[in-house]
Amino acid sequence: MKVIEHLEQSKNTLFSFEILPPLKGKSIDSIYNSLDPIMEFNPAFIDVTYHREEYVYKKRKDGLLERISVRKRPGTVGICAAIMNKYQVDTVPHIICGGFNKEETENALIDLDFLGIDNVLVLRGDPIKSEIYFSAEEGGHRYASELLEQVSDMNNGIYLDEELKNSSPTNFCIGVAGYPEKHFEAANMRSDIHFLKKKVEAGADYIVTQMFFDNEKYFDFVELCRKHDINIPIIPGLKPISTYKQLSLLPHRFHLNLPNKLVDEVLKCKNNEEVRQVGVEWATHQTKELIDYGVPCIHFYTMGRSDNVHKIVGNFV
Ligand code: FAD
Image (cartoon, rainbow, N blue to C red; front, side, top):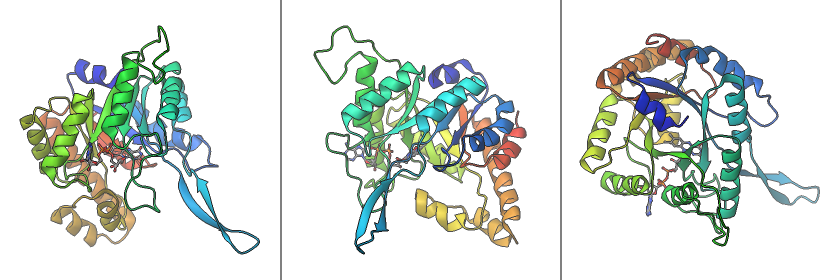
């Protein structure tokens, strides 16, 4: 079933979870171990992130350095199919522009279609670590809106080869990313909203937000979107803070601000167990307020461990 159908059919706030593929060489059991406990909450859907290649330098015998491309977390599509098969739950693979040309994207979408996966979260992807700015693959897409147009075209039976006759349309429900605290590259919020609207006009069905720790940022974002005629569902993304290190890591990695009160509480903690507890309490409060506000779904970034998310959602289901 499509994400948008889940949202339309439910009268209550739904829950969804996002997981990362395991590191290469690790078994899929780590995914099942993290999902098993939270499946009791009957999630509407499970997102699986996509991780593009990184470049590492290896010293060769002759002393020269060799640049090698490695993908540390492959398996997004396989994991989606395995989860659907094991739990009978809908999955949402993330697809990105980075590292793909249009032909490769088309083939990946055909695989998803054949597997019966009819949801995708369409993203640009971040620059690879050795680059400052994102650069598109030759013959690939520069922005999520362009990738989205390709998915929409396939939903209308339009493939890259214009001479294909009687081609079957795909039937993807398309999610996109939104940033309550602005995407880090956007000149300002107005420009970010302008380009978000382009994604909606190109056929996005719903938006999932970047994580935020202050609900006011989400409420303001929704208001701004509505003011600019962005009327599709906006699913808030939450992540419970879980380590002391995340005080600097989260703002650095995700370009967001942590509220004073949360930072003060974390600074009082004596160890990461206490930080985890603060994270659970903070996210529980956020969840309650978001449910009262009437959000259609709350999306939890589990980042590989689900015990804290289990405690939070357990308060509401
Ligand atoms: P876009 O919508 O293309 O926007 C990127 C920037 O370009 C923005 O600043 C925007 O304002 C600007 N812009 C857009 N269109 C134009 C235009 N036509 N001209 C000029 N400027 C423009 N990354 C991964 O690699 N894998 C994942 O699985 C993944 N999952 C994510 C899930 C969620 C819910 C979120 C919020 C992010 C996720 N990301 C993931 C990170 C995402 O790829 C990055 O944030 C990336 O930098 C931007 O992606 P986007 O789809 O928002 O890009």
